[in-house]
Length: 610
Image (cartoon, rainbow, N blue to C red; front, side):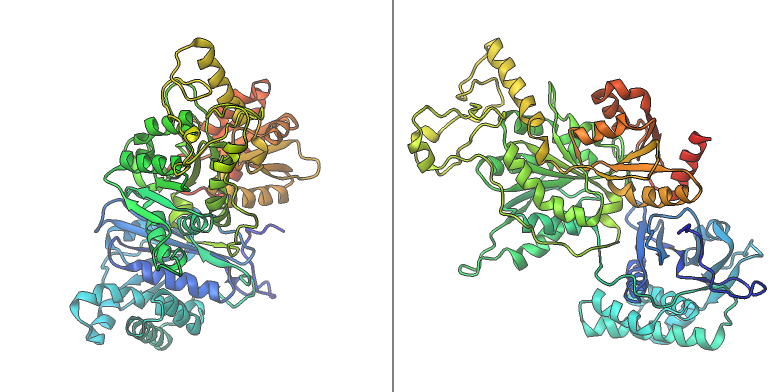
C-alpha cells in the first residue's frame, strides 16, 4: 500500500471523497503573538485522540513581528516528515495571507481572521471566516492578554469543523499549563465560545475530518533537546557550561529545569550537578574541559557559530586526551547564516576540529529516542576513549515536537574508562605513564585529581609530550604519539553505535543518510518501493566510518548519500574513506534550510534512476 496516499472513506464512487486522518495543517501567524500555545493545544489534542502527529515551527530569527508558520501533519500510517503543501491553512497574518492562500492544496480549506480585508484569489478552496476580534471583545478580558487569547479562537473553530474531541482539547490545555486552573479556564473559555459559534454559524463544506484511532498508545511527544538533556542527566552528568544560542539554548534550559528534580542529594539537599551559563562559548568549553580533566562527566551544548569558537579548545581536549561531550544543534551557516533554519552543515568541522591532524568521534541521533540514548551513551564513549565526543543533532530535532517511544533508563553501569586509583597505583610494579599504551589499544590509563599519591601527578599538555607526560620535541616521540591517537580511535570502533540497515530483497541501489532526515527517507523509500524501485537504506549513527558502512557501499551498484548541506559533506567523507568505491557514491543535497520531505527524495532518486 502506498501509505502517503490519502485515505478515502467513501464506498460510493459518486460521493465526494472524504479525507480522514491524513492531511497537513499550516497555521500562519505573527511571531510573538503567542500562537505556540494554541498550536501545541491542537497537536496534543490530536495525539490524545490516538492520531500520529508531528509539529514543526517555521519561525524567523527576529524576535517579534515577522511571519511565522506552524505545521501539523496528521498521518494515521505514522509518516510524519514535513510536507511541501498543506490541505488546511489557518490564516491569521495579513502580511502572508495571499501567499498562504496560493499555497493551499487543490480543494483545500481556509480558516481566516475576518478582519483581514484581502481577496481570496482561489475559487476552489473551502473558506471559513472567523470573527476573532469580535469574540475577543465579548470576553471582556484585559487588553494586555487579548492578543494571546485570540489564537484560541481558531483552536475552537478548527476543532468543531474537523471533529477534534473537545475533551482532548481540555486535557491538552491542562498539560500545557501544568494544571494551573486560572490560565486553563481562561483559554478553555475562549475555545469553548469559538467552538459553539462555529457549530451555530458555519456549514461544513470541506471533505477533511479526524476521528479517534489507537495509533499512539505507548508513545509520547517530545523534542530532541529535552531528550538530550534528560539523557545526559540519567547518564551521570555532573558539570555543564553553555552560552545561549539558537537552536541549542533549550537543551541547557532543560538541564536547569530538571537538575533540582533529578539530581538533588537526599541527605544534604544540594544539587549534585552544576550548570553554568558562561560569558561566551570559549569560556564554556574551557570550563567543560577543566571539569572533564578533573574526572567529572561534563558537557556543553551549542550551534555552528559557537562550535567555530570552540575549535582550539577541542584540539586541546583531543591532544591532552580529556573526555568531554559537545552537543551541536545544527542550524544553517556559514557565519550567522539563518539562525532559525535547520541544516547538517557542521559535519566536516565536527569530524576534524582542530589544526593539525585530528579526527573525532561524532554521533548522529536519528530520532528523539536516540537523542536521549546518546545523551548518556556519549559520556561512556568519551571516558572510555578519553577524547571529545561530538553529538550532531539539528534544529528540526532539537526544537520541534516528535512522536517517540518513552525514554529507557540506561541498561548498564557507567563506563568510566581506564582510571587508576590509589590502590591500583600501589600495586603496580612498573612506572605509570599518563600516555603509555600498556594494553595495545591506544588508550592510556589516567589518574584524577584527589589521588594523594605523588606518582599520580602529571602534566596535562597541549604541547608535545612523551608517554610519561614530559615535554618532548623528539621527532619519533611526536610521531609515535600521533599514531597512537589514530590507533586509539580505529581499534575501538566497536564501542560506537553501529549503523542501522534496512534491506529490500533484490535491491541493487542504496540510500545512506543520518539524523533528522530519517523520517522523510523512510517514507520516500516506502513510496518508491510501491512504484517498483527496490532500495536498501543505511542510517549512519557514528563516525569514523564503520566496516558495515564500507560493506554496504561495496555491495551496491549506486549509493545515494542524502544530507542537508550544499557540498555533500558526508559524501565527501565517504569518498575519502572508501576511495575504491568513490564512483558508487552519488551526492543528493537539500539546502533551503527547511526539513527534508519525502516528495523531494522521491523526485531526486526517480530522476537519477530514469
